[in-house]
Length: 542
Image 1 (spheres, rainbow, N blue to C red):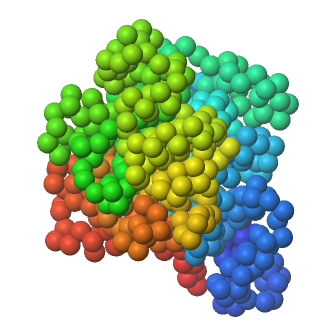
Image 2: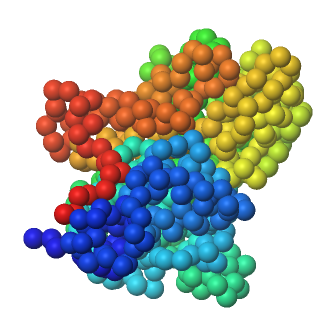
């Protein structure tokens, strides 16, 4: 029998604490008299107070800190606030604010969350996992901190990413927060500024060899299977080559995925599907050019090629319509510096280091930015796209906002209002001529919570690309014609919960069809998903 804590212990339990909303009966029975003001708040009053306090914060980072502390003290209220207005709060708890929060993590941390696995504890990972008080963990988001958003190696400061991602699992898709565990695998950092920072909280050593890292990850993955056998592992913000290698190693062995590769690919695919609803035609009839050829770019290219094969092309024909451009120029067949996962997209072409020249030669319908190079989609680039396309697709997906390839206003202005635009960070509406455009945000938040909810409900044994494609199609299908007419190719974030539920239902159908579920297929998948949703409601304690 679980005994409800009393008095101060209850007020310090974020899962049970109701703050100023404890009833009179609960205050009498649970030793709370005198520990709280006499006034008893309704839930609406609590949210009103949060809004008031947030309005007095001078910037978004201070709002992030406030909300983080709210999560530490009253988890139910934290999620009720986020779910009350997701379009307003998601940018505060995740991108773009989380980027600055990670950069300042060692300076602003009040209370540790999750687990830190230091490589100096190699051989003791299972022991450390057992220190986590919850024994039924269903989701782990784990990072090495080596490639945080577009900000590079932030070491232990990268813990803000797993914390934020798991908050979105709950806020956007209703996954119960008690099943989540953020983990930072502290393997040191090659960031000299952090190593010199007296307030840095991570290991003060440079990163290990690939072999040593892989040995540490193998111990971690094996320990998770032993301690949390129903757990899905989400790899997040690993260095590109590590991300690709680890995903390929474990995707067919355990329930895992990499959001930077598969989630980014799916949200980009959803955007392209939405854009094709405006332009007309099939993806398999178009050509695409990426700026950036790392794990994110290759992940999008691979998923795009897979969808194009479903439209009738061979894999070779599909890849031939996809081009990539990196710091050394266009990926083409004479290049000797390419990694194995890049080589399928190195096609015969004259070498060039001029992105505009590549556009003029390849004539893509879309340029997709995953380079983290700010302003790389300059006026020459956008105007070149506008010359060869009536409706050029411009997707600067890099994060955070300071690393975006272009802004919404620039894309619309330089294309004379003809661009179909979406970006990795939010932008306000843009007025051009007599029309107002509403830029879409190609945020992975449309995808990974839906994958998570479907995996949680079905207890899936594996996560496959087919599941991500199903989620992408479901998201694209939620955009109305009226939204397309104003340039919006993703559903509004104000309706994110509805979008995630619809996508999760389609993903669950794939899981059952491919016999990847650990539970029987229900007669009604929609009702089945609904039964698993977390609701941010206080427990009745008396």
